[in-house]
Length: 314
Ligand SMILES: [Zn+2]
Image (cartoon, rainbow, N blue to C red; front, side):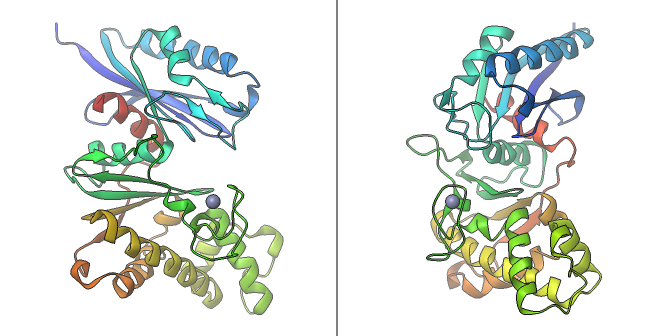
């Protein structure tokens, strides 16, 4: 019998957890979600996800589940633990892979959400067949995953690839990690809102005058409509990102940089000036060699696809 081979992808975010079944071509055949923040105890959370997952699996008549892949903040690939994730209710070290394996009896692999996104992009998306690329996810923060010589870089402790927490301004903005001036305090959905508020203190000549209601989306919309200040905010953001990427390139020599997340999807608003600054700052041997593209994964399924890619890869 020709079996229907599928992988489970689970993406754990601070607010929501999405999960589903994915085939090898990257089609998400079914999915569901749950509110992460409703669960004080991780055991109750795992029970609730597994209950729903078991139903999804039972609905696929002749399915063989090859594995479970989980993307989670501070997920450690080596230990299978979530370690000290600032945006989750469960504090300390949480043995997440083990908890899922005990319930589902399926091999389970965990990594952080940006690494999962990088794998998803490599198997199903913009980095298909690319052995050297950098994935940058722009959400509340800035996550990154490095693929070098065809493999994700985990480093000695499993936490390699934290571009978002490289310091780009000495004594700069306060970061969630407790230090100042990290890249993600400038280049992320929250970072660009902070920039907008700073820019508006100097100039009120903008459609973005209502400080209370500024979001990264409203800054994008204003920039698309030609608002000069919004375009300056994007330029400021792009310079920080372009400079950081230029430095990154000198370390891993990628062919491609893939940007994922709302900010990256806003047409050429961010990519075009980022590319300009990257070329301005990068070492000459890399000039005009590196492409920056936005993710090709379907946004609504991207998180599940990325996590499921871990199971295939495993
Ligand atoms: Zn930081």
